[in-house]
Amino acid sequence: MVESFKIDSARARLVFDSRGDATIEVELKSGKTTARVAAPAGKSRGKREVEYYPDNNAAEAVSVFNSVVSKRLAGRDPADQRGIDELLTEIDGTGRFEKIGGNAAYATSVAASVLAARLMEKQPYEHIASLSGQKPQIPMPLGNVLGGGSHAGEGAPDIQEVLVFPAAVDEPLEAVKAVVAVHKALGSLLTKRVPGFTKGRGDEGAYSPNMTNEEALAAVKETIEHVSDELGIQLRMGIDMAASSLYSEADKQYNHKRSGKTLDRRGQIEYVGKLIEEYGLRYVEDPLQEDDMQGFAELRKSYGGTTLICGDDLLVTRAELVKEAGKIGAVNAMIIKPNQVGTLTATIEAAREATSYGIAKIVSHRSGETCDGVLAHIAVGLGANLIKAGIMGGERIAKANELLRIWESSRGSLGLSRLA
Ligand code: PGA
Ligand code: ZN
Image (cartoon, rainbow, N blue to C red; front, side, top):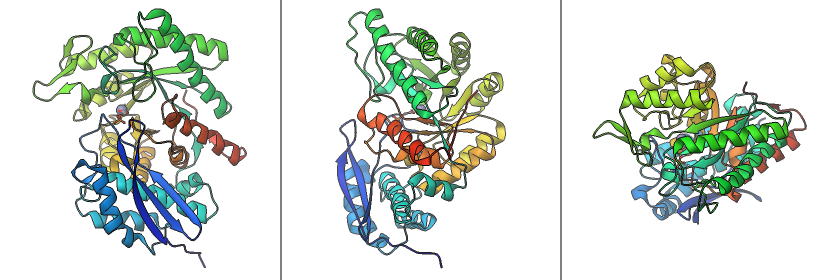
């Protein structure tokens, strides 16, 4: 007989994320076993994401949880992930988590998987892998080293993130060391190069200097060449253009405020192409606004042989959008952010769709984070190729550290992702 478990009690509380914004934390108990997960929050959100909170109010979500959701969870089996997620969707009833809040759904859904894993005496990633049917593996860290856009102040580049990742390593420790080394070396280079640079950082711990896109890309390129030589590890470079944040629907233009450039659709496609060629970018996330899937397909066709053309706001972790993109070859990589869609079950469906179209999976943090390391388990359990979780700052390094613990506990049974 299959052993079954049950949630004895569920409660939510208000806590704070790395930006100091209120967020929801959900705690599930079964006997003496507890699982607790707090939700992250994005700032450059896709318009097709679920609603985070009823009336945009985290405190309201906590109160709805404690008065309505909590008693419906009591007695349910935390290992029945689909059942829990269907229950959350049913209690909400809006299709977008407008009543209970997508972040309440996220925290509950992930906490259920962690509780089930603990009760089964498994690691969360092992349980998530058995739910997802994906082959677990250790992803390479994709680290944000320099940024601007909506994550930083005036004067920083228009590109939201300049990112680095190792192509292949023998163990995750080397990968983490390498991205950390780039962040450190970049800090020294910027101190020498940018007048008045105070080592200021944006929301994700990436440096936010007063620089143009081109100066930023040149600085990171120089840094990774230097660190690659020093460590003997091949490092790649990429960007998150977060183009929906630059786009104005009213005049159909991309407004690059810092550089004073205004580009139409064609201009933006050509600009991204030029950056890919000039700086050897191997990763480009959201090069175009979230409604232009055809534009993604154009870039994928021209550069997809060597560069990951990745959809974040474009796909918002929704299986049906991944399928649509897969069919027309719009992307060869996707961002997976479970709180974009609200439940682990929906996240797993999106990841499966990605695998079936040969789309690389990149499990990602949000710009507002907590010190929870569970994202590393989700990444490993979904067989992600990359984990995008920032580098510096307690809430970012927590994910890298958890990856190292997972690697150690797996005693060599997990493979490492390799990106040529
Ligand atoms: P976020 O954005 O601020 O919505 O988390 C991060 C990203 O665009 O990847
Ligand atoms: Zn993004």
